[in-house]
Image (cartoon, rainbow, N blue to C red):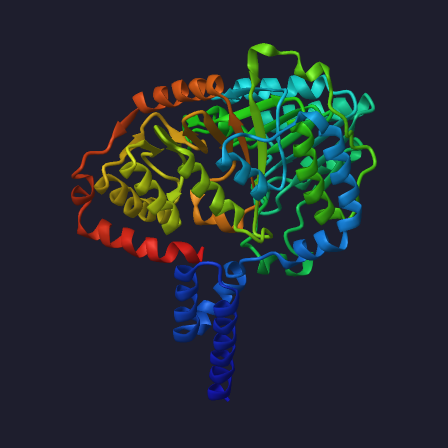
Length: 473
């Protein structure tokens, strides 16, 4: 009897390994799964069901089945954008638009926040000034002071007759009381989890998360970046300490692209297309010439993409750099191709700098990142450990092009998560971001050339092992 059970488990492990051969998205990750599924199937099989799938087939089917309904909305967006769409002279920027399947737009204003309190104040002010619609999605909503301020502002907007839709990720909000979302529902807010998997199988599909941070107000203002909704982003969590993050606000035509991104996620979750969405460019939103930028693009990525758009975003951004490439990320656990691209940028004579936390919040990330950091240092790249708290920002600065978003420089963000990145092509905005990052680097310690050797043999072994395991997660 036991031999029969062992044979069944082993055969099932072989079947899953066969699936990985056909469906695996990276050779390194696929090889790790194949070896473990064949050699230790009792351990590997549960892990595979939790974390092994690389595509969210249900989302793909939803997009296809709802294509006609969504296509009507997509045409409405393009018609509304009209002359606001711009075709950049730079071929690399045109490539990014093709990957995003959304256009670059002009006539936008943009502002970045490096202080969470200021960002939340601006967000709540925009919510309180809303007239018609609000679409909001965050990976995490905390039931704390910041969470209550955002919730109360949405309830006030709904009381004024504003139509409000709110999405959350079930995994990210696993610790958020149901009462938080119920109070919004009772006020008339349309609330939905992202529904990563059908509820009866929810615990068997933990690999996919909607990590996007997106707020669209009246189809004319959009917020995006690295901050969720919670007090820790203001540095009020004693266990975490000071928190460094970057978020952005833009007004103008680009907000309609944000509305389209939200709509696609909402359709997946609820199979409905709201009729109240506004598809017209607001003229009053373009009045701030002080913050006017040349061109903007919202870039969604996720496991449903047919072109690995998350990975290709990083590769294209790195390729765009001629003079400076500065990367700020909490998790520097690269795809090998991204690491090679960064090294090639250095060989081209680009000023390459990488800013990461001195103390990451994950044991695996800490050790896997050490391996990539050592490789960067060996290639002459300046790596900085941020020492004034925990840096959670996801910013890439390359000459006159800046990306601010939710995507980390790691395998999960490039392949598995639903992410959103805002791209701004503008010299003045880029200079402002450069000054922000220079301040961060002054608050950081540059790692010496001998840093890797000083870690010790045991740490170096753990780092190499974590690097091998990384693509499986």
